[in-house]
Length: 435
Ligand code: SDX
Image 1 (cartoon, rainbow, N blue to C red):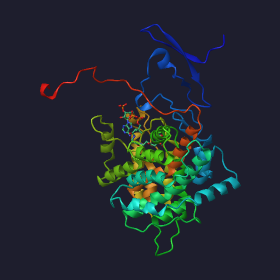
Image 2: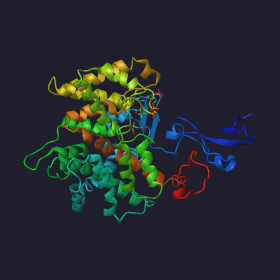
Image 3: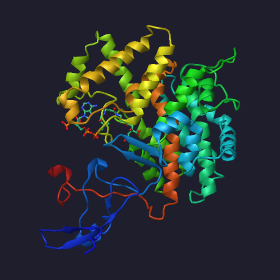
Image 4: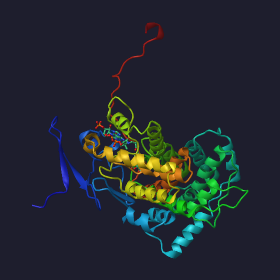
């Protein structure tokens, strides 16, 4: 007899049964369609942190955590890292296929002509304290972008969605660089259309109006690679935030601003900054690595080994493998004995010790994308508080690609989870003088 592609749920408290369909993926883990559960059996599912919950159907990125596999639109991250560029990956993630040379030229031209910000937006930067964290500036300025583009507000019009995507991809480097420039009392450098995406960002970050500046090719290439590796990662916290915000038909700039806020947390995108802080603490404490490893294992200590562990990868994060090699290659080309080498050596020592320690092995805790990336950014002269900004700048294409996919998904509807209520039973109001 042909097996049915369903599961049957039996409610032992009532004897009722419910047959639920299994939805099969192109690749990876199948899902049980529980949409009938509440209607038929009167139950919600309970899954804090969504460990076993698929929130949507998506064709953009595929992860296999057990085998350390990451693919953008079917292309392995290792091949894209080796052979592609960030802008080409942006095209791939948004449109679904690699562009031919005409499509890539047109796309680059579109992006190039949207890199400027409205002059009035400069006032937004000036309103922040000089010591404002650039992620806070990004949240504010990106959210404010929506008030500058009333000509494209129909989120169900693919052409208007594309315009918003082009504007966000193009303007994020300018907003990111100007957040840095404002904090350092430096004049805003305008984008240059003759430079590629990563080079233009380094130009806006480090050029001075008083002299010629050429972005160092070694750093341009490394930054482009880092941006490819951070471009998308399935339904992570910040991408899910963008989807949930966009599901109410909010404009894409507001949705991306919400994603930036979510990414800021040290458990998510803020980890790259936290890794360097941890490594500097270790280096400045005479490299007492074991002390920090013991703290990370101590249940009574909130300290975690930053850059280690991942909800999906229970093996080495494939991005961390690529970044570690890039980090090694870059440090080899810098002056011997540079201070970044000591951070890298310390990170390698921690990795070696941790991966032999049963606490980390038994929990499948390996270095993730954030573990080595900060050392490369430091070597480029990018300050610590700009690390997560670089992550946000890279992830914008992932966020806006998922938003675009959701807005054309017939199954998509406003996200509105339920709860397991644990509050008071009904009770009557008690007057103040009787309490
Ligand atoms: C990113 O989702 C994505 O795809 C994210 C991301 C992306 O590209 O978008 O990949 C980017 O956010 C990478 C992760 C960056 N964060 C960090 O490096 C912060 C340190 N890592 C942890 O906080 C943690 O590993 C998480 C948040 C990444 C994952 O948390 P989970 O999946 O909820 O796992 P958990 O907290 O339940 O941990 C399981 C066990 C626990 O111990 P037990 O309760 O089983 O005894 O592992 C322990 C945790 O205490 N553990 C760690 C640890 N990470 C998990 N112990 C020490 N150090 C750590 N880093």
